[in-house]
Length: 296
Image 1 (cartoon, rainbow, N blue to C red):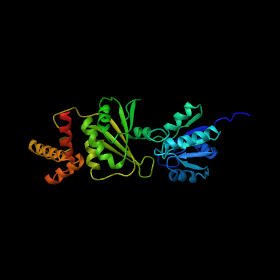
Image 2 (image 1 turned 135 degrees about the vertical axis):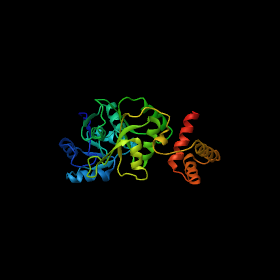
Image 3 (image 1 turned 120 degrees about the horizontal axis):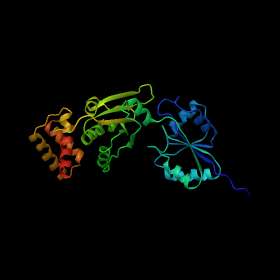
Image 4 (image 1 turned 120 degrees about the vertical axis):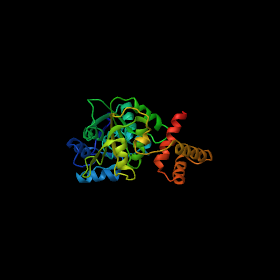
């Protein structure tokens, strides 16, 4: 009996917004494979329906990636072909796919990568901040304890930096970048390739004034340029337009320390200090963050 030849995993880049931005080769593969493994089946079925593709679809996302990889490997080993797609862009880059691709490579199963739309390069060019041929892509910043280190790692980079960010964290991230990197030019690129695409350009401070209290829609690409302001005696929150006396800073720190010492979480303590003193939460946050840095 002849051995069954394993199938091929096709890693397919899909549109990042405009559904017309898909290659003819990807469409051919989606029509010809036995199965499409999609990050969100509802999202991918809209794309398939537009191009009248009736290939079966299964879910493959960050919460079932490990278990589904086993099933897909078995199907590939039986000679079936599988197309791997994410909601937008290239699977395996800030999207599920890396586990399956690695597993296929280890087992000698063919992996064919089909290029296509890319949010990083699109944002980089649209920003006007590209510097030569070198840039750093950092994906999404961590939201937990590793965030401070990730931000510190960006400080020493001498090239343009591109990050992804969710809209509800945009303002916080701009504040963090200002605090760690100092003032820089930046572009917030959102809804790329869609009808409402917008490129917001300015310094961190200017963008903070634009977005403070206004959560944008759609995931954002942040393109960060080289430093534009040399270090000076002003703290970042003073550069952003806040005027805080030493006495007020001491009151904020003392009150925040008492609240956290009594067991209140840091963020809740910031809100409570802001409420008691009648000042913006951002102002309290910046004062507290500077204190923490000084204590390290």
